[in-house]
Structures are given as structure tokens and as C-alpha cells.
Image (cartoon, rainbow, N blue to C red; front, side, top):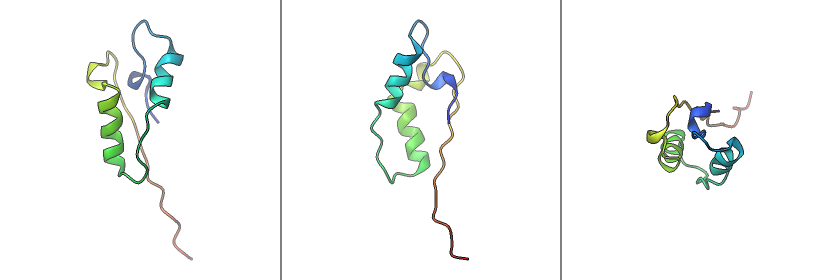
Length: 65
């Protein structure tokens, strides 16, 4: 999950912004911290004009009961 500040850019259509995120090729199996760092770096979030928040979760198999 993420806020609009992660992808939106002033004067850019939201579909273009979301397309940029969708085109990211992320590596399966990397930890959630590395995943978020990779997204922030590749989307140039440091240049964002709005607040940015993103949440990632790792799914683990259920333990047998």
C-alpha cells in the first residue's frame, strides 16, 4: 500500500504515474526493507512534492495446528 505522493507528479496524468510503478521489476525474495528502499530509490521519491508513505508485508506460511 502507498500514498499518492509515491507516484504522483505535478502536471502528469495519474495513469502515467501508476504505469511507472507498475513497470518496476522487483526481485522476489528480497526483504521488505530492501523492497521499500528499492522502490523509493527507483521512483526518485526524494524529489516528491507531496508526503510519501508505503507499507510492505511479508507473508509466512501458517504453522501446523
